[in-house]
Amino acid sequence: MTILDGKKISNDIKNEIAAEVEKMKANGEKVPHLAAIIVGDDGASLTYVGSKVKACERVGFESTLVKMPHTTSELELLKKIKELNEDDNIDGFIVQLPLPPQIDTQKVLLTVDPSKDVDGFHPENFGKMALDMSTFIPATPFGILELLQRYDVDTKGKHTVVIGRSHIVGRPMSILMSRKGWPGNSTVTLTHSNTKNIAQITTQADIIISALGVPNFLKAEMVKDDAVIIDVGITRVEDADHPKGYVITGDVDFENVSKKASFITPVPGGVGPMTIAMLLKNTLLAREQRKG
Image 1: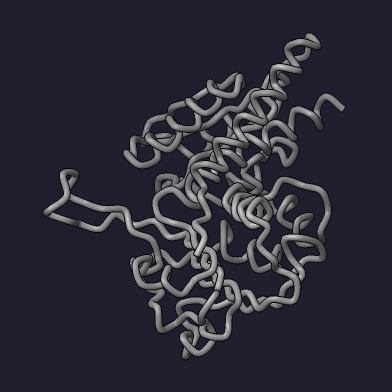
Image 2: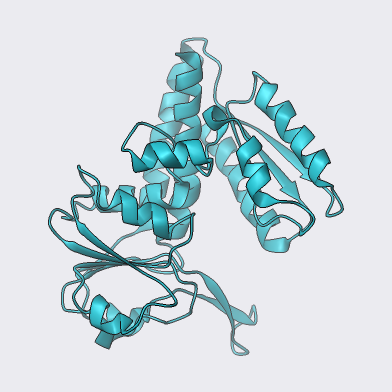
């Protein structure tokens, strides 16, 4: 069994990006600039955005953090997005989700300039991805592809089962794993909360990508020997014995499933660290496209 170490690979990617930024500086070029908008004071979102800012500093990017109060109106947020769209100094930006209930998330995502949509959530970028055209791939699926590639995981002709149909992970992964190329060329089954007899499907899978958000959902008896397991789930589970009062748990019963898997991602330290690394990679791509 091989651990797909997202922490190590994400550090490798950041080092590679930092080297590219140094070349840009040496050539007198403008370095990439990533901006983030956060509305409200959700603790998890603030922590996540803060880690993005630190990652920018590490690789030599410029970064801008726009904080807006929880009471921000939809019109105010759309105005700020249009400002970033028109700011030539900004190469890419993200709007941190979730947004407060008074704001239409879909309207917000549609307002982001597709050429600056480094999250890969705009329908234009999603459509290009579905058509196998060059575009921004959502950071988490992009990170999963990178893990599979760097660990030389064979996907050609394999049966991949994706658990979860979110626009951020599940649906993109089902498209990407079936595309021509590598990682890809696999036969994909997309399952979700209404799928019947899901264990019968997962036991046939060569590769399982679980993004359901249910702690320890995938049990050892639902997995065949030598399957590749990608755990995207991340949930805080109360644990009175832990100093923090909780533990971070994935969708997979890691202790037991790992005994049968050929490759498996841990939680934490698997897919999670890859997301920020690939956001940086998308921003570097955005800078190169704007330069071109």
